[in-house]
Amino acid sequence: MITRTASSLRPVWLAVLAITLLPGAAFSASLEMLTTGGCACCHAWARHLREAGHEVAVKELAMGQLIKMKLDAGIPTALMACHTARVEGYLIEGHVPEREVRRLLDERPKALGLVVPGMPVGSPGMEAGNKREPYEVLLLKKDGSTEIFARYDAQSE
Image 1: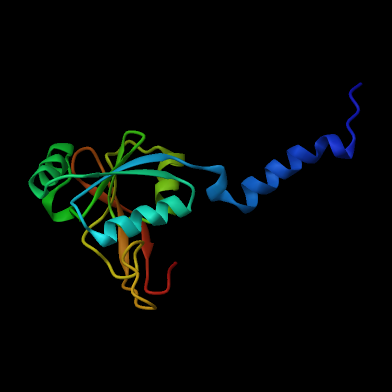
Image 2: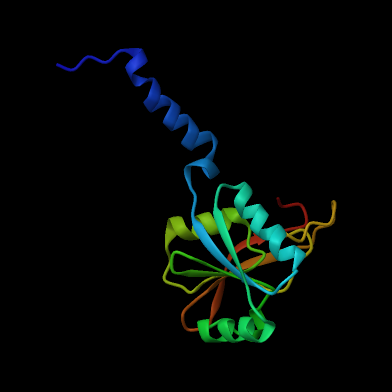
């Protein structure tokens, strides 16, 4: 018979609490973000991911190289944003919130990745005080089609 004392279970309970109360601390990924030089909102988005515990390596490309990479990867022109990240076989295009990146990696759908087209005000990296506009995070499928992965309204975080 195995007998455990309360003190021997303390590390287990601390781990459970950390995972439950601090989900960002329990999950981290390494991303490579491709952007052009000097894009402040791209670096702000990278900071958003870093603050959630992820590693983000930034690679700056000439605009033509960046566009070519996006097209070669299967990102339609109409869905392009200012930066593209790669993480665990997925693409993250634009100002995708960290919680959706985490959800993508948890669920592992058969897709190219996630896209937030354009640069919606209030999305991560595009903060402007209390100003927010609604936007959608799209799941970009391998055939180029999309479906809504998440919606953010003007009051969403």
